[in-house]
Length: 409
Image 1: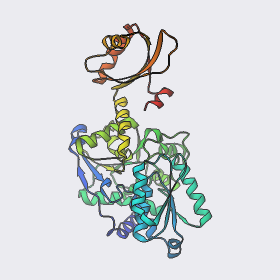
Image 2: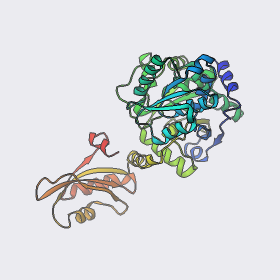
Image 3: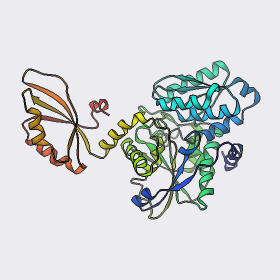
Image 4: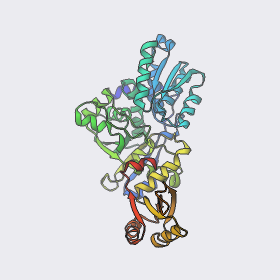
């Protein structure tokens, strides 16, 4: 995998995929004391960088391979890239998506591919869908288009870094890219080679498959993957992508899903940018990086395919991460005024009840309720816990690592 292959990929789709803009972000620059720029891959036709690798791959197929058709598995964005490429080049495609793929991404695959694409929903995770896609490709003789683990895909994704240097007009000190299977990270490393630019790969904390591969000396499957960051929730990274990471040794950081949600909301409310979870990975990773002041940092905002129905969960996760949302099991006496006394004794002036639900009635005298409380600020937790300790109610906090918490967020 060489920089020349990245250049060749850029030349293949120069008339089809225009460069996405690089924009300075005042909010992030001021917050971290850096010169922060966003590479806006959410603004291209596919609303992510995935169209680059897919188009480079499909355009290199032989006439016989094009006639047979292609197949791919995707968490959503790669499927859109394949749909876009196949519609542009007149190739039939079968796209496998896991059940966790948001409806918005399914609809975009269908819209971009039109009559050229057939969608199959299979399995609970990307890896389940990938297995079904591989089986179908073998049986039907179709070409499998990997989401990340192929030199042609990697070369296409590497054009993102190539554009950054051209558009910025000078080399930045740092480039931060999101990491799922590693295609974008590998392509960035292939283009930059032994450059002095520091490359940082941001993985979701619930799916650190590249870090696991580096530690093991090769791709290994994770025991568990949090599917929330669907565009980067990959159980096992690729052999080709890991090889480039092992060669160039970029810095890898794990970003909590709650921190990603906070950044998604900041992007939306402060910058007017709709980002999907994987798209917000790179700017979210700036928190805690401890980079030299005024360093020029480019974060790849990798995608904007977010289903609006997910924002309730995003807000919830952000509040929990910031320490403003907490849950408790409270045993209430079954008598008039019990809830009112709880509110008077426990809640502060800026706190609010966001959930109140009786779990069951143990007997005629008492009944436990699940209570969600949103604090005015994270600093309000200790005072409310002290007031709870002095209240006549029996109260048990539900910690974020409790199995019960998975039913709430």
